[in-house]
Length: 437
Ligand code: ADP
Image (tube, rainbow, N blue to C red; front, side, top):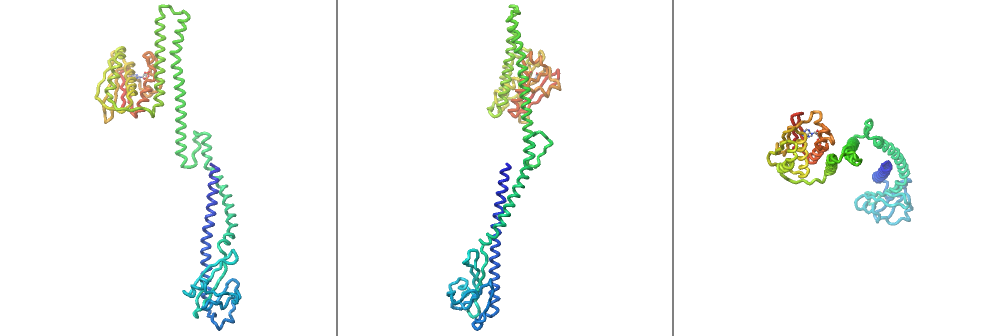
């Protein structure tokens, strides 16, 4: 970045100096040429009005100016007088462009390259009253000679500009990069504020993303620790029971009971692993979920029907009511959501309690409501029950085959469907969970 800025600044300065020099040169040369031409015209007109150029005077004409050449030509193009050359050697001047136009239009001018390389000769001719033509001429530097004179100054300026640019670029890049470099050391050091307004959104986003990354890393760490802990309990039990049998410490009549305990713990392990796999699938499902249109009531009726046996076993009555309502969602995930909510409503219910599942539409939104007459959730736990492995009553959850992940899966499915979930619960009275699509 530093090198790039340096190179860019130096390039800009070289281009700026070079283009300024060239443009100034052309502008200056143009005005210089005009000035020379104007001066020549004034000289010619002044000389014309002196009235000195007439045939009688010819012998006494004497213009000893070093820089101004004066030539007088008669109407036939022959040179009558020249202050710089021997007229005897001069050819007929009729063909010279400035003289031609002076004879034709009264005045004429021309610029010709000099014998020497660095100068141009400027000519101005004017017709006198007697029909002859008076011409003045002077040498002036041409654009190349001016350029060669300006070049050393331009080169010196260029070198100074490049040196200045390198110094400026150094300070600029240092100021520009310092806050970035400082933040690279510790992005969360809030004492470092970006030096430039444009960097604020960039820094805010990076800080937010960094906080998100840390948070999700911590959550993943916690989850892994929880998973290990949850898996360890049934495995320790299984291993313990098996060891007792292995060492002959269980009476043959009790073996059946022990096998049952082992099976119960193995089932618990299986449901835990299933829920963990499900959660990790949902974690990575964001972009690939297949949506379809279906009737929410119909899907709910199927789930409720499948849970009738489970409800009966727990002495709970489960029923379904409501209106058919179409939703666009992933059918399997919604089935899972209904199942988890209903299972909880049965599991955390009282003897002879009821579960009522309702579907319908409110304010143009489809909803699903699972209401039970169970033990309810104390206020202080209500916020946390959607967390992974969070349980109000650990032993009741475990006894009834809960994994502590059911509502975490529900929350995930709700989020994937851009839906909302509402919980209303009173300890000892019951719970009502509503999902609004
Ligand atoms: P679990 O597998 O333990 O049921 P969940 O994530 O499904 O895990 O639920 C978390 C906790 O929320 C449960 O342990 C329970 O304490 C509480 N809970 C969930 N649903 C209900 C309900 N309908 N009535 C009372 N408590 C509930």
